[in-house]
Length: 152
Length: 171
Image (cartoon, rainbow over all chains, first blue to last red; front, top):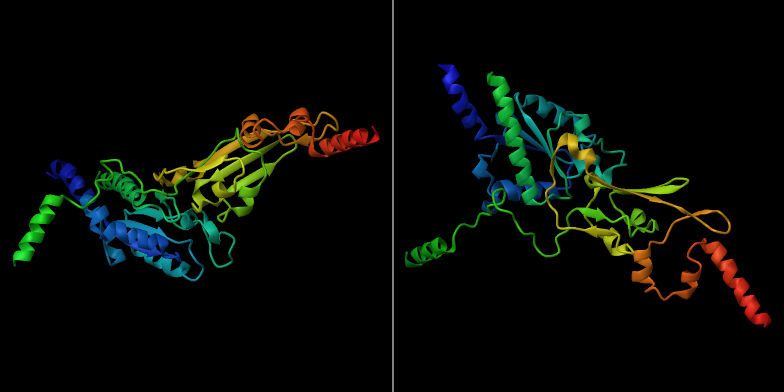
């Protein structure tokens, strides 16, 4: 019975990944770009079922912006541990990849891949909305595979 | 009520506002700054781009017989300063915006260039070469002082020219 349901179930779950947005000290450029992608009808992410969630406990995809400042490190770790497995981690912007213009500052601790297991990185300062859309599409593929692993 | 109906009808005629991006290719607006490309055949190694780069994306590594140029996409701020200041047009900003990678591919997204030095014919010092394309474009192929002594270093060229000058004065 469950064997027959597995395939449609997988499609259904992968059809609506909820996104939790985490700002670890970003300059807000990437956040604005992300908000325009996720919320405005021009680059409608609802076409892929992507929806912003308010609570980390409902989230499937974590989107991280910013170079991880020392002050928000503990909070970021705490929030990240609350997001249920399996989860997909996507970083937006250059700061999570390398620290970008803040890279030698004493107050930041980049890259994010040092702290969390990152799956998809969207480069750019800030990245264009189309690139972020591409990132979401890549995330959904990974998310579907993770679900399949979990179900088998 | 009538205005509402009018607006609704007008909007139906206009079609959807959503861009169909992942399924249909998008054209970027004019002046969009995307990825940086590098043309090693035009680079003279003046290091102006290293100096102006805000995100420290461009690095020039000087070795004994060559210099290595690299620009990493992961820390480039797309400010276009390198293109503005490049005297020969070796660096160009493209309209490429497909920047979503898998995380393990991030460190592969870099342009590399390796340019060997040439040796000065007189003092055997290693000097950065002036590419023929740049000589044609910037000097228009008419700079006689450069044309005659393109194989020697600036110091030796200065000495040779001073020698020529003294010869001319003595005559």
